[in-house]
Structure formats: C-alpha cells, structure tokens
Image 1 (cartoon, rainbow, N blue to C red):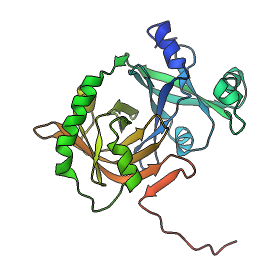
Image 2: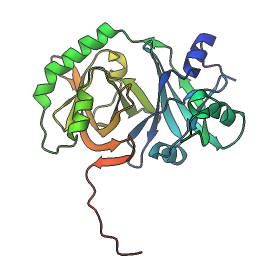
Image 3: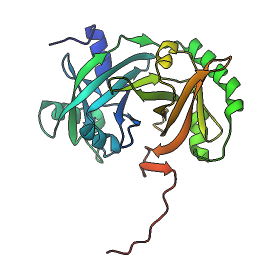
Length: 277
C-alpha cells in the first residue's frame, strides 16, 4: 500500500473539523464543478472519505465520472491538494458512525451524515503554506488589470455574486481538467470579478500551478467565505497575458450552491407551464 501522507501531523490536520475542504468533480458538459466539502478527511494512508449531509450535483457527478480533485485548506493557510477516484458509497459502518458522532452532527436536530463516499488517492501534493503578503500583492495586481476587462453585456453575475467576488477576505479557487482527465484545484484568492461577465486574477501566488492551466480550456472558479456564502462560476479560461501577467475566466454559467436553492442561476431558464399532472 502506497503511503501518501508525509507525517502524522499532516494526517491529523487533514482530519480536523476546523478546515475548509473542496471537492472537484466533472459535470455533464465536461467542465469542473467545485463543491465546499469540509467533511473530507483521510481514511488510512491511501484513501479519503466524504460525509454527505445534503444532496447536490457533485454526488451525482462522482458516480457518473469517477475522477476527482480535492483540497484541504486550514486556518493556518496550509494547503494540500490531490487527485482521486470514486470507489463506493456506504450508509452504515465505522466511518458512518464516526461522522455522525462528531459534535456538529451528533447534536444537530436538522441533519446528519446520511452517506459516506470513499475515494482512492491517486496523488497528493506536498503541503504548501500561503503567505498573506503574497496574497495582498496578487490582489492589488488583479485590481489594476480588472478595469480593462469589465464588460457586462451578459450580466452573468447578479449583484449579490458580484459583491462576493469583490471580497478581499473571501477564498477563491479555480479548477481545470488535467491531461489525465482529473480535475485540479488551485487557490486564486487574489481573483476578483471584472464587471459581471469575467473573473480576472494575477499570476501570483501559485504562479507555477496557474501556468499549467491550458488556454481556452473549460474551468470553474468557486468563491466561499467564512460565513459559508458561496457561488460557482463556470466558463472558458483564456491564456495568461499582459504586462501584469493575469488570466481570466469568461463566464458562461453561474451555480448557486447556497440554500435554500442550489442550482444554476445563469443562464436563466424560462419557466415552463405545467400541462401534465
């Protein structure tokens, strides 16, 4: 059995409840779909599990297209990212009991963990520590180039989503599909929307990882903050360019992952009259 975790400390931090977890799946159009999933945690040296407490598209996508990407992001700005493949889903067993005995779910009257999904780890990168100074520099560069891309013909982002992407304190992540068909997640906290139709971001930090994103590829950018507000924009990533190196996502679809309605909010689907009862 291959051992993916470098130390017991890394294993413990990735197992803790006080972290942000992200799951990247592949949607029906071959575009990445990123979901906030704090229940991600290791299961031995070569697997991870995810506890499911609500329905969403990602649970459907993992069974239709088994390749996933995942990321763990701690309060200390430590980041681990990896790739995996879906194996099975259980509704009983030790992992199921472990999740439901956690304080968040054990004492919650409204929801608990209903299913546990298991994934084989294919690769796991080394721990990276983000430095706030580099994030601030990247955010300032982004805001210098954003006005040059701020067209709003489609009005893809509504006013609420636009305000979210402008939050400097919010977390943003981009996902794309690599050459082996796995979704890859890269932090781009420096990102911001340019008008309503584009999201732009400078090349730093994570310059090396951002450079790997193929030009004109399908990609998705997730915003999430500590208040658990989130929105997902999907579209086409253009190549890095400009005197201040930056990339942009031309938005084609917007997915609202917050309750009470989880679903696509752009493009707007016309309401159809019900004729069959």
